[in-house]
Length: 291
Image 1 (cartoon, rainbow, N blue to C red):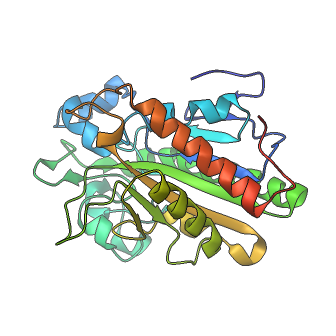
Image 2: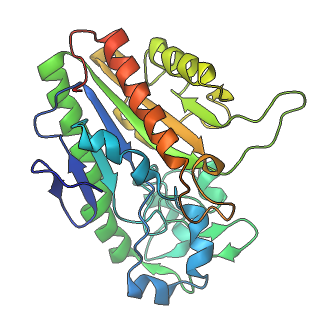
């Protein structure tokens, strides 16, 4: 990642160009963290290789060119296995936390019941992640030190954009395992999510989808990924805050084992740059992205 003078850090995320944004658009990458503390590795029963399934592997390199061009960009450094930034604070499986009662958490969502709540508990086909239940204070520390600062920062950047430009657009970037073909339809290689129009004006997803189809990709809208907590938390079109999620097929930029980037990652990086340019030039033409 190219570091600029306007880069800011804490232990768990890094941001670029967010202090004085040149455009009303923020790129965010919540699931690319891949540095696992030794204590965490001692506490789990699965291998580092198996943890790759929880990562949006190397999505951060897909946005580094945008960061280099001063597009506001925010990248989480804490791995999803430690805490999932796309889940609500109370979306916790209480049975995996010592000292936590079910009355203190939200009614279990489908994701939580499937083992993928705020603190991932299990992986399909692999089983339990943790050797033992986690102390409540440890979960609280992760919420206070990682989850809340990340979302507070996004909210603050978007508030500043609304004050400066009258609007803010969040693009939340993820990757997905290859999807299966649906009858006679080719599997989507990109999935655009806007919570069925609840988190962003339709023109945003229409422009992105149109561009990607013209570029030769198979594209889906809100299926099977419509967006999660991040879009729910930060998207509010009525107040000028638009939030979209982008899911990218890992086969487009990773090797056959989905472990390391291949040369084609540069193409996907260019696609993301074009998406930003299209949104800025077509929806907010007076705020063109820097060349």
